[in-house]
Length: 477
Image (cartoon, rainbow, N blue to C red; front, side):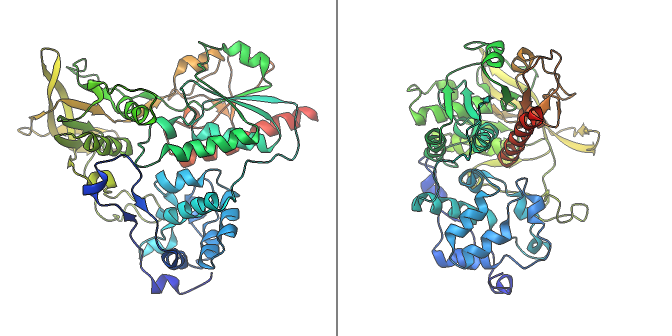
């Protein structure tokens, strides 16, 4: 490493943000870059640790010590070259990844981890600024055509990797624009959609075809795809939200989080012009049910829309501030996290069970909750605590409790088997079929592994592209 004592000289620097009081009034990205010297010092904190556990923590296997060393030496183009070997879209992961690499950083044993994610983002933005990132070239033009269904992170990675191999790639997307979760599910203040469009434009310039506004089974039948293409790859995500089927669920004012977030993103993009009252938190008392990242995105969006009050509740216990002995490094730290959205204003509570939605004349007015005590987390068993019942005043309740599986109607069209969790069943990445024919079908991303991270979706896309390539190489033998 450039400075083997860097981790002793420099502490972990905080990311620079616009103040919560200012950023809550707009939907633009509010993260600010450091000065160049700060990047050098932070990269210097990456130790010569011998066995870089960050490689294992990152689903992509990014060569983190290598690009940190290049940044320390001021060789940003070299850092970009190293990063692009393993990560198709560091401009995305550098913004929205929860950074499992940092959780595995050896420095985290007795110190604060290296600021890997923020450095990664700056490497990517420098590459675009300097013109180092160009349309992906292909070494040979193959005759085989591959259809990729879904243009989220898994679909985009699949398409780019297949294009590198020389396949003729067409990406089908049912929404108006490409990007999937990146464009419609993540708020603009975390990921500006111009960043997504910039990548899609590069892929188009390289020769990848995008057909948007096309729904398989409605606009094009599965049989037509299998006739027109040599292989099909499903990258449709896990988009069926987990519901809360309790009394009052049908009251006006109870909505899925993703519907709420997508509506706001479409407004900003100009895809729609009317802000539907049911998805407008202005002046309302908002209750976000679910304590994950999607819930935090709802908090940030509600505050920007002008909510009167935002509350967020979680079924699980409040996490500790530091690792417990039962949660040692390099496991993912099950500790309390406070996101930038939480800093903008929210009341948070844990170990809270939602009992029923309360309303008048068909409209939501409150949510009845009760505190619980967990008796066996492994078996998901808990007891209600008597006397803790209350009705939380609420005009808008947002269900941010995860997703159960992909939309099965699509996989059924291709005669695909499902695993016990309702995901597409695969051998490797090749989908198991109940209706076999000559054309191979593959699956990758959340529709195959279940709800997961963007970084895992990219990794899945890279690997399924390899599987497709091997399929046709095998057939040549």
